[in-house]
Image (cartoon, rainbow, N blue to C red; front, side, top):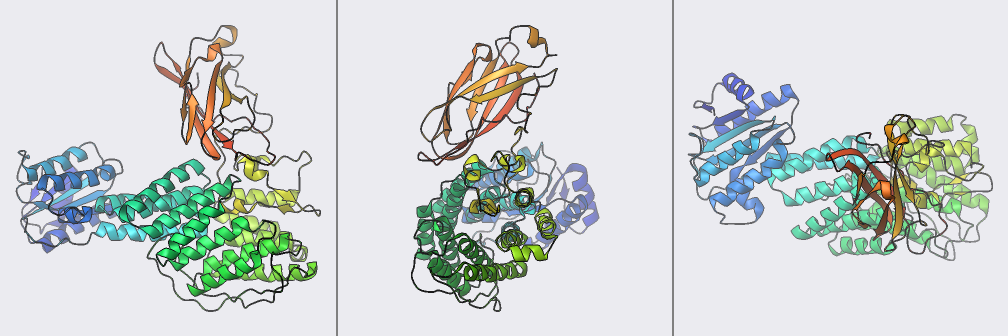
Length: 626
């Protein structure tokens, strides 16, 4: 343990910290000590490229909402808040305000000593730098605001902006740091928002089960801290997940909208109103024109340019795909647009009022001609494109460019490089799925009616079954496709590869024996271990291996174990529609060795589905080869 009595020598303190990774500082007024700790932390962090987390002991009781905590309870809160951060992730941690007496020597078991002992114990096997500031405890001292808390909120805002732009690659690292910062600060509200945005990012990346789990956790945490706007946002994101599985839930959007309106969150209510309208826009007789106009007015009131752009996009899309009926009589128009709002996912992030966008357009009623509807759709697409560009949202811009080109042949043929230009925008945000949709638009429908591999390996079958084609051979891309940028599913078989084996390896083959699974109905899955021609098991009976099955979502799988040599068969019972992941682990019970581990993703459709193409679950990459 090190001690710097006079906190004037920054270089000596830095050398001591780099040598021992532990520095305990005492003997100075609070302001001087804190400034010294911050300077040391900043120097080390800048050189090593590590984040800095700051925690003040005096804040522990107030942040927890438990006044009058004993010193031991406060010490435990500090250690637990720090444990999950600097043990796992290398960083620089400053714990200031440790009561005097805890830094003099090895702790003796007192309440103060237990705090330092706990910090040292948690720090022992980490690669982080730990700075401890010891001071005299003063009764009635007010808790200082945490730098970590402020940094956490800044990180959340930056991550939300990346998600709004449709570029989740940069959001992940920011959100991980935000979660850690709020945990260190003991800020339960901030942590709930961080978990929510992490779930939103996973939804955008197409990781349905992970997104659902995180959003449900976030909703429960919002409820626990009384954060009703957050609860409403989480409910809306969960409803958007349902649309990806071909089961839109307008009632969930309506409930989210009611919650937003109850607490006066006008921006949240506008977004929930938009997604409710989108979920119902294709219903016969639904007054989509009126609803899109109302939503646009809501976004205009709160100066949310991004929301206005997506409203214009979906309004134009609906107009271009209908036969002129909009569920209401008479004529209608679209309101003017304008303003730039804050990010759509975080509370408390304000926007700046913007200047006018596109002006109102004269609408056509149900009796309007095809030419007029097309011209109106073109105006709406152009307005959306301009707003996406102003809001710096390449995700929305790429999708609007694609739909505008598909719905407006004249626009497409004026630009011979239209497809390359749209691919370039998708590529700029790493959206390979968007690029695959452009490829499909250029190639047209396949002769066998099956989606191309680059789409089949990314999207659920239920969503791809809603893909349609116009008489002119233009794709009617499902609306939900633009809600995600899904990555390829691990191990998804390429055409002709399903039965191809390595000569020297043994592989796990999974076969879905029943029809496409639906909620609460068991479906049988057969598991086989298939050795290649060059594997020793190809000429000898399989040993008595054990196959262990685990559900990674809201489903049951029975039995828990099977023996492949005897024909292992499992019953998979999902409890909700959507994408479900299962894990199968093949072990040698004689040695306790894990030979191979695979994961399968199975699409579960609602109990009353339309036509679907059943596909067998595809094993993921193996952890080890048998």
